[in-house]
Each structure stands twice: as structure tokens, then as C-alpha cells.
Image (cartoon, rainbow, N blue to C red; front, side, top):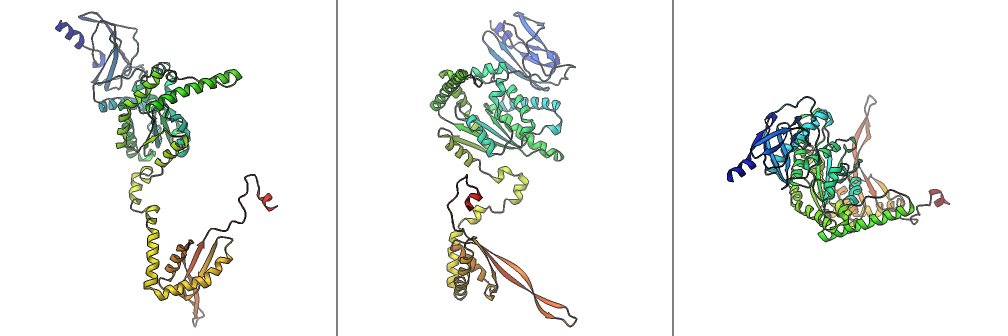
Length: 501
């Protein structure tokens, strides 16, 4: 009995191209090697022999060098996945672009290795379909994830507008709905095979409308998909480095996860179904508009909870991406405006994320405006006190000049909210006088800056008639302040002509 079990379960059979398949059982198996055009389908006719036969169903295999064969073993429905390294040449006329949706299965190999195998396979496919110059992915990608009912669709257009993206969002569920087999799996609450999802995603990212940026709704959802994102980021960096003349964009990836608790998620899903049903009934009654499709998972509470369970199972995987990319976890239980305000705050401009690394390195040491203004009020007070204590005579003359001369000029220029004062007085040529005036006016609430204008003043005439000029540095003070409000703000419908009348 032991020998029979070992022989059935661990029997190995080699197909064309050196591909090794491990399997056993009494029912028919089907294997299709789509990448190399090899099709070898076999069944067990007795416990000890295998026979080849034709008319095979098509399953998936990834990569020319590293291949993964998947097949189903009835009646126990076990799934085997074996990865072997081989070098084979595609046969003439083979179909090397078919990747069909299957149920996501668990492979015993390391996720990083699986991701590398799958990424290399899909990238090889892209290289055969596009030229190198055409492999330009969006310069910015926002991956929007969240619990079911957390408001991903509600906030999609807001995020696109905030990041100035012109293309439509790439909604993974919509892409899957376009394939009947994938839609059937999705409606059952089951994740669709990664190879299919990633393949159609990559092709959509290459559309011209996404060159400025793309928002991907519903990706990643698994550990392998997270690893694929990292590999895509590294590949884009390598393309930019190796091909400077092709102007590949520097990749900028951001992760946004909208979070709600399970009860809130289930309630929103069920409420969504009720709302769609009411709107469809109204459209049917009035005979206008198209019927909106009801999600099957929104009609069944157990399926709604199943969707949330799937999200929770992969949540830790999503959080792991914060180690490589900007990651924003948004609590989406509040009102729409509150959620959008939090998204906006978390995605504020950050030069380190937006600029090229070399550009940022050059300007990093220059302080930003907020740093310059830190402690400005405290420093201003200290300077004014130092002027009054250490430069009493100069301080008194500057303050007197402002009171007697400048204040009168303010009254004349009050309607415009700005005045220009030329420093003709010799006082302003003394060291520190202009600084005192600027600080005094700043403390009083005015915006002021002092500009220095060199002036050529005739000094003498030489014997040959040549005029010799001396150069004097003249101070010019530019002062602005809020102008007075003469009339209340007019309504939107009032034109300038109606105001004059």
C-alpha cells in the first residue's frame, strides 16, 4: 500500500522541452504549455501507465525559462504547482500571449521567487508586443486600496483632480468584469489568478492617457501582487538609468488604503444594493436610463462579510509596502468631506517624493519657507529691543523720521494700499538705519522691503569737457498694506457697469 501511494503521488513524467510535471491520481489531467506552444495532455489508464491524448483544455504557464504548470486533481480538487528551470525555444506558430483567469492558489515556493518568475514572464510578453520606447509607464501611480464599502469609487475623481491626472481610473473590478470567467470568480468572492490580473493591468498602464499619471483602484490584493509592484518600480528605475536618451519617467508610487470596520463595511455594501435597486426601479418606471448592475456580494450579507475577511487577510501585506513607498492609511468612516480633507492633507506636496533624486540632492540644503519663518516674531522682538538699547541715538532719529515723514505719506496712499518712499535723507546712508526702519514697520503690520538703487550724480567737469559722475547708493522702501474696503462685496450677478450705476 505504501509503495502504491508513493508511486501514484510522486510519479514524475517529462514532457517535450524538458518540462517536469509531478502528479498522480485516477482522474484525467490536462496540462497546456502556452508559452512554448507545447501541449501535452495525459490521463491515467492504470496505476502504472500514462497515455498521451489530444483535444486539451488550455491552462497557464509562465515564462520561457522558469515555467509554472497548474492543474486540478478531481475529486479532491487539490492544485499542484511546480516550477522548473528550462530553456526552450517557442515553436513556430505557437500562441504565446494567452493568459487565462484561474483561481489564485498557494504555491510552496517563496513569494519573492514566484513574483520574479511571473514578472519576467509578463515583461517578456510586453517586450514582444511593444518597442522599448513604447514601454513608458505613468510617471506617477497611485494604488488605491480599501475595505469593501470604504469609498474608493466615491473618492476616485477627487484624487485624480488633486493630482492633476487626466486619464480615467484603472478599476481592476471593471477589467475583470469584461472577462466572463474572471467575473464569475470575482462574484463568488474569490481572488482571480495573479497572472491574469497583472497582465491586463500592465497593458492598460501603457495607454497614452495615463502618461501623466494613473490611479489604480483595487490593486494590490495579495503578497505576490505587492512584490510585483516593487519589481515594476525597480524596472522603471533601471530603464531610466540605462536609456537616458529615451526620456523614461522617474517612477513615483503612492499607496492609499481606506479603512472602515467590518460592521460599517457590511452595512455600506447592503445599503449600496438597496440604493441601486431603488434607482433601477425608478428608471424602469420612468422608462429612462440604463439599469445599473447589482453586485451579487451586496445582496448577501455572508458574501459581504467574506469580502471584508479577504481584505483583512491581506491588510498586513499592504501595510508592508510602507517600507518602500509613501503610504497613507485613511480612516474612511466619517463624512465624505472629512475623508477627502484627510486625503488632501496626507498627499500634500513633498519635494523629496516629487523631484528627481539628483535634483533634490542639489537643493536639499536650502531651507524651505516654513523653516525660514520659524521664530521670526521672537527674533524681531529681540532685534527691536537691541536697537533701543545699543543704538539709542540712531533708533531715536529713525523712529522720529517715520512719525514725521512716512505717516503723512501713508495717508496719501491709503486707497491703493501701497507706497514707495525714496530715501533721499542722509540718515538712510548710515549703517543700520534701513534695518531699523524695516523692523519697525514690520512690527506695525506693514509689508516692507528695502531696495538699493545706484545713482550716477554729476560731480565735476574735466578740462576736456568730460563730465565725471559719482555713484551714490539710494535706498528705496516699498511698503504695502491692506487697502480699505469702501463697498461691500457685490453679488455674483452684478457686473462692473451695474456697480458704477
